[in-house]
Amino acid sequence: ILAFCCNWCSYAGADFAGVSRLPYPVNVRIIKYMCSGRVNHQLILHAFEKGAGMVLISGCRPPGDCHYISGNIRCEQRMRAIKNIIAKRGIHPDRLRLEWISATEGVIFQRIVTEMNERLKELENENE
Ligand code: FES
Image (cartoon, rainbow, N blue to C red; front, side):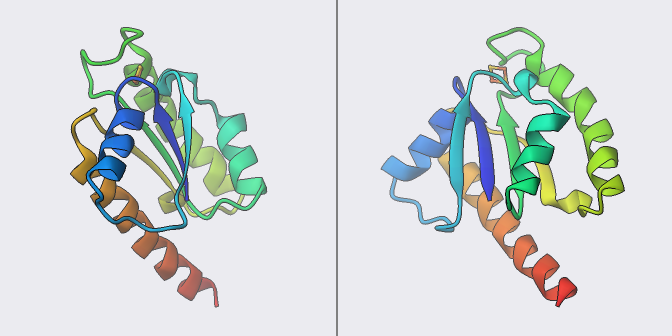
């Protein structure tokens, strides 16, 4: 599970999960990036091509928490198109998830990645 977490909210939320010692799946790899608005379909396709089972895009809560004003809104608008693109490549759309996680929401980060891990197991079982 590759988790792109924006620098200002989601990465801090993931960090908060860690310092709070909240257990979450060990197969989560976190990449800190500046804003969910930076995500594009090439980046997500590259992650899947390199073997990611699931990709999480997470950022600051809309509408007003994004530190770049509207990056999270643009990300949300882009996500539907990206799901269509990955579906055309034979990648189940459930493998891509967009979530908003603020800096104090370690519990939410934990819940989301745990749900993703469960869904990953289901998808792998469906493919067997
Ligand atoms: Fe977090 Fe834009 S800075 S989504």
